Image (cartoon, rainbow, N blue to C red; front, side, top):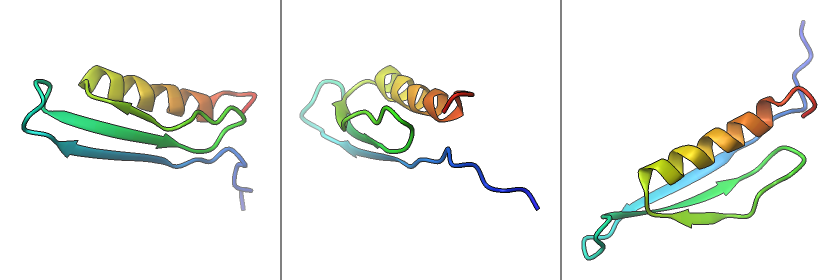
Length: 65
């Protein structure tokens, strides 16, 4: 039986539509896990959401954790 890794985390991504905004939505990103936990952020661009998810996943998957 393999021992589970201590490198775990949860990323909470909350997205809502705001009709009066030119970009159309807002997202709140709450990352957890890893040695350098980032604070929650709010974004309103798809690329910013994707970058935050990638950065969080990269941190969790770092060999040195």
